Image 1 (cartoon, rainbow, N blue to C red):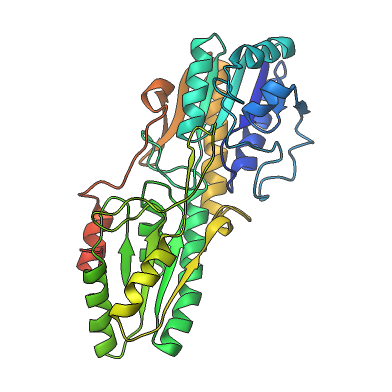
Image 2 (cartoon, rainbow, N blue to C red):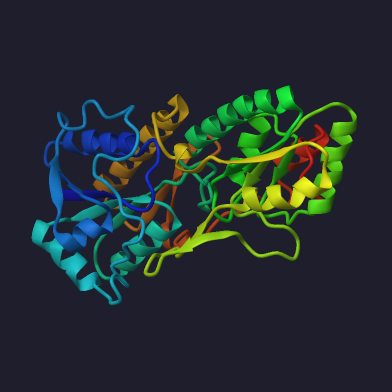
Length: 350
C-alpha cells in the first residue's frame, strides 16, 4: 500500500505531529509506503513529493509549521483560472497512491471531498487555529493560538494598567470568534467582541468610561471578523483564485479611531497577526495531533476512506468528509463560555 500525506491551507502548530504519527503508524505495518506531497495541493499540480520515513520524522514533534510546506490558495479545481484537477489526479496515479491523508480546514476538506468523488480515496484530519470546523470539538493548533493570545493580553494589560489606557488586541479567527472568546477569557479581557455578536461602539465606549470613572484601564479582545452593528467586515485584501479570497484584518484600528473621541483615556490597538500561527505547539496540541494522526492511519489500514477524524468529548470519532466539507462552526448563541463571560462581568459589545 502506498499512502500520500499533504498539509493544505494555512500553517499551524501541530501539523508536524500529525505527519509524524501517520508516518510512524503506517510504516510500522511493514507493507505501507508513505509519501509527503509538498506545499499542499500545489504539490500534486507541480509534481513535488518526498518519501517519508521514521528517521525523517523522528525530531519534528515539537516543531511548528509543516516540514512539507503548505499553500493556502491552490484549489486544483480552479487554480490559475482553470480546472486542473485532472493534473492533480494524474500525478497521484503516477506516484501509485492508494490513498491520501489530507490535513486541513474547511476549504481543504472541500477540495479533498471533490478529489474523492473523482476517484482518489482520502482520509481527513481537521486542522485550523480558528477551531471553526464542524463535527469536532477541537482542532489542533487552536490551543496553541489561544495560549499566544492569552500571553499577549497579559503583557498588554501591564501597559494598559500603567497608563490607564484602553488597549485593543485583535486576534485571528476568520468568521468565528473562538480564538477571541477563549483567549480573551484566559487573558482576563474586560471586553470581548465576536463576529457572532455585532457590537455597539457607543456601548463599548460607555463601558470604558465607566471603568475610567473607577480608575480602571480597559483591555478589549476583538476577533478579526467582528463588526459593529450595521457595518461590514474589515477586509485587508482580496486574493483572486483562493478558496477563501477575503483576508480580514484591521478592525482593531477601525475601533480605535471610533472609540478615541468617546473616551478620555488614550486608545491603542495591536494586531497579533501571524504570531498566533507560529512557534512550538502546546502539549495539548501535540497530543491531540498525535491522536488524530494515529486514528487517520487506522482508518487507512481499515480501508475506511472518505472519513475525517474528529474529537467529541474525549473520544476520537470520524465523520463522512462530505458532512464537513466547506462548512464552518461559529460560536453558538447559547454557548456556555458566553454565559461564563457575561456572568463574570465581561462585556460582549451589546
